[in-house]
Each structure stands twice: as C-alpha cells, then as structure tokens.
Image 1: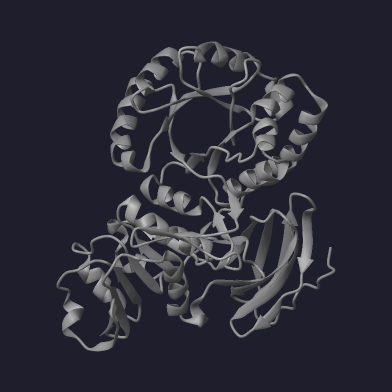
Image 2: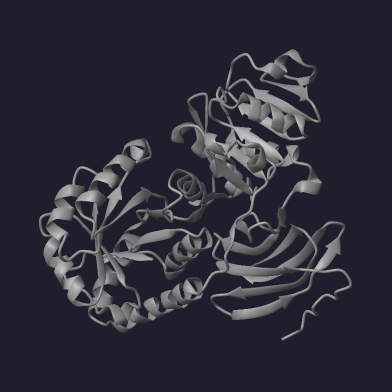
Length: 455
C-alpha cells in the first residue's frame, strides 16, 4: 500500500504504520520529498513518462523510486522507457502505475448499443466498479511486477467534497486491492491528511480502522495463484477490457493468455477459450484445443478457418457453431453489443460440472479463487461492494474437509459447515461486510469433516 500525499506537513511513518509515500512530481515536490524522507518514509515520485527523467535526476539521492503514470494506450511504449531509466538510475525503483477506478456499487448499468447509451432499470442487477479486469490484464502484460494502480475519488455532493470519502469507502479500496493481490496508491482527502498531520482525534480514529484492514491484509500469504478454467486470449485494451470486466463481475474465474501461452500443455488447464485477438498465428493450437473437447469462442474475428469446412451444429443471425473433434468452435460475427449478456452466455456455455465456483445471494459480491500450484482451490477472497453485511452461499468444485472463515472485523477464524454434493462443496459465509477470506482443505479418503464448532 502506497499513500499519495499532498499536505505540506507529513506525520511520522510510525503513526501511519506505513512506509511508502507517493508525491506527484512538480517544481515544489523535492521539499515534500525531503520532509517525508526525514519522517521515515520511502518516498516515490509520481510522474508521466515524459517527466520521468527529470524526476529521477532530481530525486536520485533522496527518493526511493519513480512511479510512471501510463494510459492503456501507452502500455506498448512503457517497457522501453523503463529499461532506459533503470540503466541510467540503478539505485531507484521504477514501477508502472495504472489508472484504475473507484471501487463501488452503482444502482444502474449504462450500455452502449449501436452508439446509443441505454440505462438499465432500477430493478436490474447492481453494477459494480471493480479493478479485477485491470489487475488480470496487468499480470499478463507485466508478469514481473505486482499490478499497481490508483484512482480518483468520485465525490458527488458538496458534503462529500468537503469531508471526503466515508471510512467504509477507504476500507473497500484497501480490501479490493489486497484481495486481487495488487498494490494500490491510495489518495487521502485533504481534510484527512491535515488531521493525521496534526494528530487530530477524529482523523486518528478513522485511521485506526484503516490500520485494522491493513494489518489483516498485510499478513503472510500462502503461495497461491489465481484459479480459472476460462482462458482469454486478449486483444488490444479497448476491445478486450469490457468483456473481461464482465467475466470478473459475474464471478467467472478466468486467466489472461498471451499468444506465447497457447501451447498444448498450458491449454490443458482450461475448458473454454475466449479469443478476442487475431488467432492467425495460433490456428493449430486453437483447433487442437477444440478437437480434444474444449469450447472456443471467437469474437468478431473474420477469416477462413479450417473448422469452417466441418459440420455446423447451430447457427443464428450473428453466430455459428462448428463441430471440431470432441469440442466446438463458436464464431460471433459482430463486436459484443451487450457485454452483460456475453458474460452470462460464457457461464451457460461452461459445463456445470466444470464451474469452479458459484455464488447465491451475492449480487454485490466478487469472489476470487486461488490455488496452490498443481492443486485445487485452496483460498477464496470475497469483496462485498454494498458495504453492508450479508450472507453468501458458495459452491466450490472439490471435496473439502474443513472451511475456515476470517475477516478484518472478527479476525480468525470461524469454522463453516461444508455440505458435499457430488463433486462440489457448499457452505454459507455469514456476515460478509466488506472483505473476507475463506481457507479450504481437501478431504482425503476416510477423513471426517471438521465440526462447525471446532476451535
């Protein structure tokens, strides 16, 4: 967790309990960098790629590093800039800082249909603004760096603008980034910065609640990686983002693939392959995947393909399904007019027996399953964007003997009762307010389930 700081006075690092401070690069930034350094922080300068050289030169003897603010369109050029800067300033840390969005629940969904904006009815499913799609794309583009993002607060009324975000909004931002295994540059409202600098009681009370979440999510993590049996071959950011965002929103576990990932061994991990980028260099891998029983979905990617000479299973105005070996290829002839429907279709196209996770009573909840290498799901991170306690019913693929639940508010741990249904385990998560974590342990032959009241 990084804190963006703008107030002239800086409280000691021991008060905030954090070590990393971010200061935007400008002509007066160095004095604030020196102040932060004296108070015990690792201070990073935030700069555009065009400002990065000047910021690095000015801060090379006192700053810890430089965060490069990049837009999605500038991603292709940033790697070369990073390589140059790291060679010129080997003592500084250079990281890519991505533009995210404030995590929140909106009451309505706005869709773009043929250039016309349409707003969903108040009774439709709540729309969640999450950063999971951004994080997954970044993990694929820059696998050597933990995804790092920031956002600007949307303060809509005069009271919010004067007082700043509610404490729960801060907590949601912290919990989301941690649950996604990403890093966050968190902006603090001017009033909160002033209160912390002056050791104000109200400000310190708010920050104490923040520290509870920071301590919970900063604990040692198990060696896990995201789970997902839906592979997504992403194209350019603009075309790929919204379909990926909706997969994340609908709790469809997916993994972003690069063309180099389309090897037979890697594709064995997936049941469905969504192709959003030109498949021209990967036709054989895609065909082999379908032949062995996989489902391939091509989105607005026209061209002669070998499976088109085969048997048609079904067709419609905008789609056609081809039989390929034990599997099938589905071609969508147009861009996605409604990503919401697309995400629901992906879930329907996935064999129910192969769905890794399903949630009920969870319209405002995003669940992120994690697994140990070469093993099944072992951990589940939950984020409730409504910021109000709710009970969530969960079904996870696998047979689990014990399920432990922990939250920042209640600590660790509460034992949940697992109910086995065929190849799946169901359980109910009680009182998920904002963030929670579930630990799962598989049942071995002859092993009894841990009772719900076990200590």
